[in-house]
Image 1 (spheres, one colour):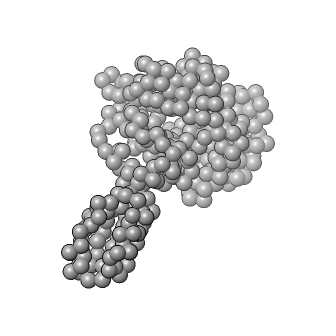
Image 2 (cartoon, helix red, strand yellow):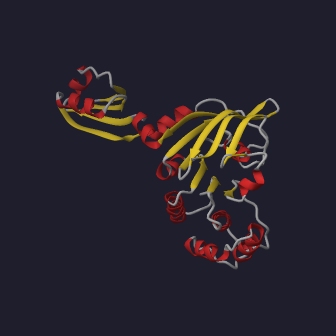
Image 3 (cartoon, rainbow, N blue to C red):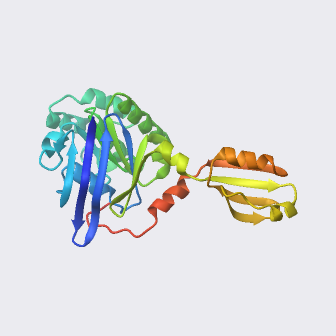
Length: 303
């Protein structure tokens, strides 16, 4: 079942684009990464999907319901952490869970307390005395406490230390295994790469890629270092078509592999080499190509 569908979704801010003709389809139980630089249109997309903004054209549905017209019904089964989280200064985790229990009409305190222990957050510390990371933990606990069918997170690791980021990742994987859907918005490649099964890359309000991480790894180039036995040989040998030499330094070639690794290995076996190293697929370089280009955003766009 498709939990989120967006078809030619657009929202403009005057002459500027928030999102423009955006298409998405996210299934049940997916850990979905929504990746792009700050200002690319991520937050506008989330606000459209959650019914905080009305699209100028196109359609967004969540659980098969119109995201704008049925937003109140949709929100009953959604957990949301905004990128610009704001909390009352007098609130603490224990009181917040009691208030949210009344608002949602269900008991959240027991599981909320478990989450607070898991994220190492004291229940009685008021927001005004919390660090940024502590406030982020409280926001995550409130988003997770009702075990939402869909969890939408906008830059959720902001302010979290590495251990808490790992704990959050474990929590999200557990949710996905139980059939819940996670929409994880970020501008950081590494955390999306470690966590998500599929990623959509957004730039200037448009989706420029929507693929599994496995497919992206297959497309990404690998860094290759070739060291010949003699510098004269390194100057004389013509590189194969699947190997792009970026720099020559004596006996050393610094290269990018544009073809398949087995082709490289067969070629290397016929050369007089001192050493050869093949790096991991370089997703950073691939993503920088997707990110290249001017950004056009609206005044409400935070990320």
